[in-house]
Amino acid sequence: MALGVVRAVYRKMRDWNLYDGPIPTDKIKLPKKDNRRMRFLTPEEADVLLSELAKTAPETYAMALVSLHTGMRFGEIAGLRGEHIDLAAQTIRIADAKNSRGRTVYMTQKVRDILSQRPLLCGRYVFPGRGGGRRSDVSDAFARCVARLGLNKGRKDRRDRVVFHTLRHTYASWLVQGGTPLFTVGELLGHSSVEMTRRYSHLAPNAFQATVEIIENYLEATSFSDPVHRDG
Image (tube, rainbow, N blue to C red; front, side):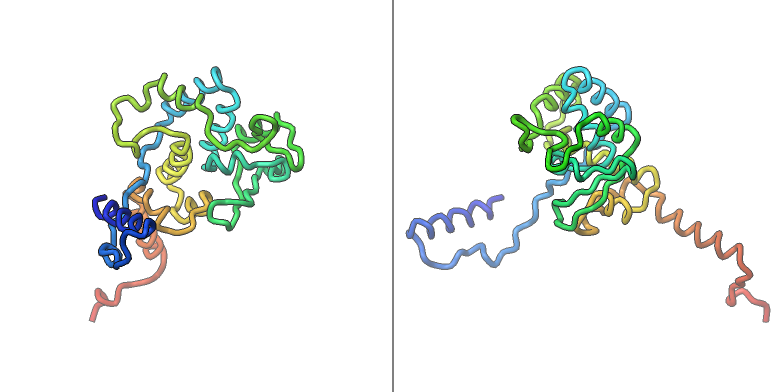
């Protein structure tokens, strides 16, 4: 942090024409700040949160449920238009994903039920803001609900606090805990690199052992014999 402040001071001095020499920190590789959110909800916490939102903020509840069941970001949900929804195929097409590739999201039955109750008109937002425009921010109702339920009580580290994005993280965490391969999780989430998905690997501690067991079981089912242990 101190190096970042020094760099900022030198750059501002350049902007003000008070200094025209080299910036001493330019050749120093600054450490990356770990902003990764590691908190995810338990099924019980998720149920309580959604139930409270359903009672107090139905629109926020609908968007939260979609995020928890699909792993979609708030911005992706806010940008959904009628033409992106295929109820028959139970898929959602995200054209302007964060990594620019776009991806297909698969609905659970609850997501399908939520979306089928909305007018899915071409060019119209599925979850419109005021005046029918695109929402730019998560409703304050979400934070108020989290506060009422005490989900952030005693948690000082911002990475450990429940925010709307926690729903996406929860979706991924539950998938990994359920045995979904990391590659598949990354594809479903639309990660641009494997490094982004790897943060969930600690949630599947038995994955590597299970892979070894698959190989052992396969070999035992074949006529393969270990040449090291063959008789003379």
